[in-house]
Length: 158
Image 1 (cartoon, rainbow, N blue to C red):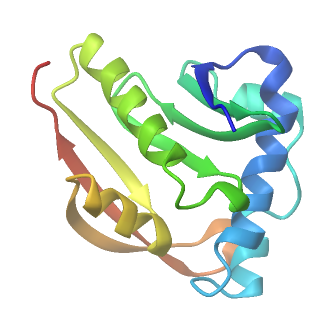
Image 2: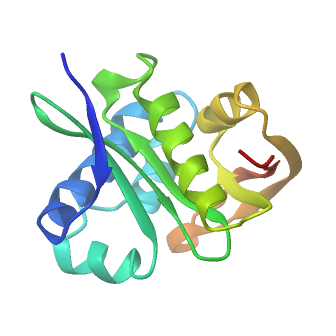
């Protein structure tokens, strides 16, 4: 399987919305209950929703022979906003390659640090890649209480 990482284009948006939904509903089983996963992503997001939601962000996608396999997004202010891979690609290195690519983009833009609000599952990934816990916080997507983890990564030049 050959992976390619590239900038997203408008034709990717509906696929990113489906990937996000699938990652939440399949990949987060065990960390969040069904009500929390439904609140987090009630339905696959439309292309229009994703276009508006990700407006102004750097969007890097990973694709393989089956199509979109993952994506990471970065806001101009240095928030790693979204980081998802298809459930069948979890743990195979794609997320690490997307992570490195988004760090390279952040450095090119002169960002000194990045922040993320990581799920319970993503927290382990980010800790493995040098991120530091700031705080566990309670959030209420669609009125349903759940926790995530605010984390920071200080970037070195290069």
